[in-house]
Length: 570
Image (tube, rainbow, N blue to C red; front, side, top):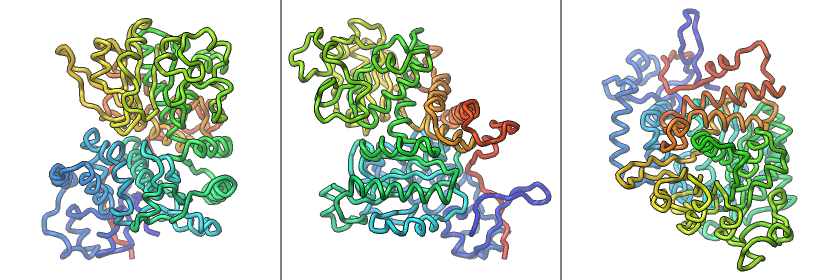
């Protein structure tokens, strides 16, 4: 098997031994250098006549590719262009992304990826990752042996049911897996040769896909219940058997399956759900940053969460863990959080509740004292008026749910409230920053789920933080992998929250953004990775010897886009 990672020769020089030549090298995106092959490499690898005469540097290639990128008219065209580059030359792709991260991250991931997911079957170009379909349940072991690389640190898996804010798009979920792994590499310096995207194809309930002649997935309604659980368990057990130290990242599962899958395996292996834990960790970091700016304590806050699905309850859980780390009991922390969804405030005795809602349900006797129009449906505005929250977080996908009346109700009892409309893509955001700033006269802390332009209000420019999980999950992943953690504890995630909040500009200037510039994400990921690895060691979860320097381990594992010399090996 051809390795794409460098080795060191007797003179302590790094190089990559290459076992293939000619077009086979050019067709391999992990080895292809395009116009950057040196003259000696072209001769040795039989490429001399296959490339134009000039030998370019990686930097020269980046300039050309950026010019081509800027020539694309739509975000989808840009997404397709970048993915095509990834399919042909990974080093150049990651170097380009690193140089223009702030501009290109929204193209390779949210919000543009939502468009790419919907057009996955039509735009399908080149196979990547592994598709494990339900009809192949008895072949899972064989399928996992088809992975391209011997050594895998991270598997990122989806079943495509709860993709971003757009729902069930079946095997289009592979786009999310690929895009998320790109973010792991460009933001967290994770080696792209040691990761694997996997799509669990358990069917789809999307009628549009089932009737689409181009749909590439298993054309069947989604399996559920015992059949689904057995399929997932067969997959996880096979993965554990082949890779005992694997880090398993769950992505965009439906809300019931997301929590069940995570909690079923979280004490058996290193596993993580970004929709729940990553979203929660980033939101907590925003809140912790605001607390420092306001000179207040998290345990004194009242939090209203609008949206009680996977993301909302994940945020509630992470907020609870963060408050417990500051001295509250679990029950005390949970009682400072109010959950609201489309059916209003969640309270004891309501129908159609999930088990994970239980810790946050309000008792009837508490609500008897409230001033509400209908005790069976307590609206978001009524919750705000009765609870007097200092923090309002949205993950409902309900556009414009945070109204002027709601914001002013918060301002009536709170100077500088924290308002986080986190739903994405942009058109799902609960409020737009320009409105929040105008309604509050600029006296508000904001972070949003999707990128928004700076807001100019009364001659002042407000830069808007994106509560982007890319700040958190790459660093958590590297920390877990470097420490060989047995599993991912709540305390490890809270350590990541604090590490991110330490980088907040608002800690030094209350009018500054809650989160740092995305261009600094690689350095921040290093800090998060170390914090997570050290917490794993402190809790006895690390399987790395106490004598090893975890910071050194992290530095040695860090991957950067760089062309190494090639030597042809027959």
